Image 1: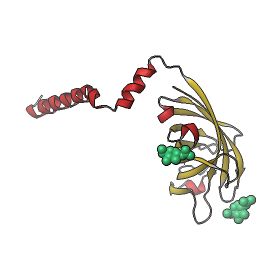
Image 2: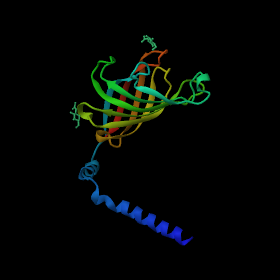
Image 3: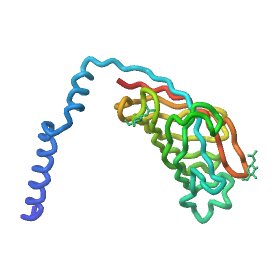
Image 4: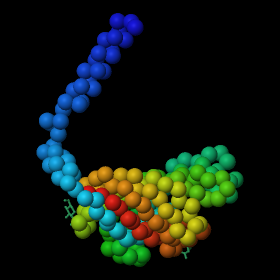
Amino acid sequence: MTKLALVLLLFSLSMAMQLVQSTNDEPKEVDEWIQKLHHGEEKVSRLHFYFHDTLSGKNPSAVEVAEASRTKKSPTLFGLINIFDDPLTEGPESTSKLVGRAQGLYGSAGQQELGLLLAMNLFFTTGKFNGSGLTILGRNAVFHSIREMPIIGGTGAFRLARGFVQAKTHFLNLTSGDAIVEYHVVAMHY
Ligand SMILES: *[C@@H]1O[C@H](CO)[C@@H](O)[C@H](O)[C@H]1NC(C)=O
Ligand SMILES: *[C@@H]1O[C@H](CO)[C@@H](O)[C@H](O)[C@H]1NC(C)=O
């Protein structure tokens, strides 16, 4: 080992130790939350809302950001990637009460059938979950009647969350791609 490599190794070890020892600086709120967690029981929360994904019009909530040279020729639009910032509402109408937003991306990852890789953060702006979020990562085969995708984590009231969502198309315009999707969420958290 050269001298430089040794110095770098020692430096990174001391950095790692500093990181491990820095618990005193952590927010008090996190310490208290961890204390309570020792005798915390997991709760199950169920949420229900509608997701509005709009590609048409002057102010689309989803935009195409990339595609492969063969995407246009593919019946499943293989290689297409969209980014979205979609409103979540209580009911299916676009005028229904806003309960949060879904931000993320979906990429067309299926060659045999339309199957999206969906990666998104749901964050809520009303009720007892105001300010809390859930992260979803899964396969969304949009022409199936019900698509189930895992919840891989959360923030706020949803810290350490796990669970799943079920998505069901409420409305789809095949010409524009605009869709309204009903979501049922089952989240386990503390
Ligand atoms: C949600 O939380 C934010 C930030 O704490 C607050 O400003 C807002 O009024 C809350 N909204 C509702 C509907 O409770
Ligand atoms: C579907 O989208 C097309 C293209 O944007 C539009 O002309 C048509 O009115 C839409 N149909 C419905 C039922 O929303």
